[in-house]
Amino acid sequence: MRLRRCGQSLGDERRQRRRDHRERQQQVKHVQWDGSDFALQSFRPNHHNGDRLLEKVFRLQISGSKGSVVGISEFKNWPTKVSGSSWIDGGTIIGTPYAQIAFWNYPDGGKATKVVNVSEHMAAVTISVGQ
Image (cartoon, rainbow, N blue to C red):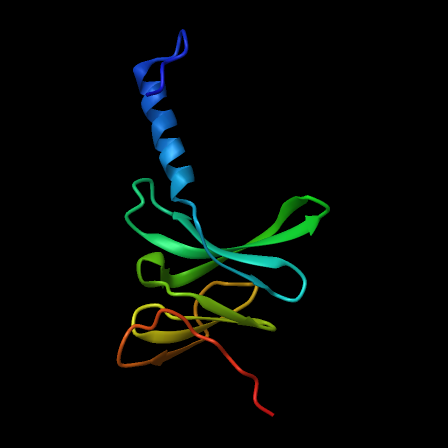
């Protein structure tokens, strides 16, 4: 239980609780190396009540024992509820929303550049570059 600080109103306490809840909702689902940075597939609410969560990739550079966020890629039509994992290959990230395999520009994000419909939702995708 959190005690209110002296002078903090009940409204302030509720706002702090909502802020704490939003921070807990931000979770890392998948980590991979994109060739220059660590890419952390994560999500966070894009509406005040979190009714629609969209995937984001946080790019981190590590120096010594510290990491810095150097960019955030946002992806349209990639809801975290059915997101699965992703695979980064050069300038493309591939994900599995719904019963689809979708391709986005990476790290640009935005709308999918290509969508392949499949019969069932897949939890993950791995790509092997052919010769």
